[in-house]
Amino acid sequence: MASPPMKSFVSFTETWHNRPYPAISPTRPEISAAGKNVVITGGGTGIGKAGAIAFAQAGAKSVSIIGRRVDRLQTAGQAITEANPSTHVVLQPGDVTNRASIEAALGAIVAKVGGKIDIFVNNAGVLPKEAAVIDYPESEVRRSFEVNLMGSFNALQAFTPLASPGAKLLHIGSSISHWSPLPEVPGVWSYAAAKAATLKMIDYYASENPNIHVVSIHPGIVGTEINPNIPVGPDTVELPAHFLVWIASREAAFLRNRFVWANWDVEELKARAEEIETSSLLRVSLNGVDM
Image (cartoon, rainbow, N blue to C red; front, side, top):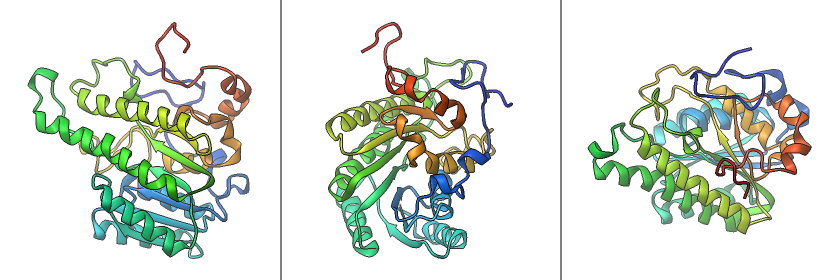
């Protein structure tokens, strides 16, 4: 059994994962995505690309990826098709920071796949520079909120009219949105603030749209293009990718409107399903005040 990578981390489950394991395998029939239209923002690289491959492996009817760089989309598209030639793959240029762009991208996807969106993975984001609050450039704060908060805001508003009945919104958040400041990770307050603001927006969105099944996910610490300071993270990119497929399945229905870490063991989560559903567990709140 692996351990959390930082001493300040405490796992909700006894078992901690850094890589995929059989219970979240996208080839498990119990978590099949057959018949589903999946859309992923920031799908050309990193977690978005790996998630798209995993949903194809899970038999999704279509997997559409949105990104700003056409070359990255093309490379990812080839990998998705190789994972499952039967999945309809759509490569759609788009920029979540531009409302008209993301609306046009989602509209084009729905037209191409011939149906509404069943699973929407809100993944696009940016990791801004690290520095203390008093030393921080205003332009970097604005960039962090423009991509991480406003990008998600635009994506939510564009997605919702195109969502199928009972659609699922899987939000790639970050545990940094609920950490206390950690001495092991200094200078990341701008990213933390933007992610915390986005998580609160997602909470309100879930409350206002009970017809949408919402789950927020910490994907682990993965070495991707968004995270150049971690060329090789402690977690493989396939861990959150496969976890997303499981989260979208009926097995994980009890995690609606919750925040979960991809590192946590799903069998242990399932064993506590009733407790989670009937309590404030896995909701971000003030310690000692259950509201």
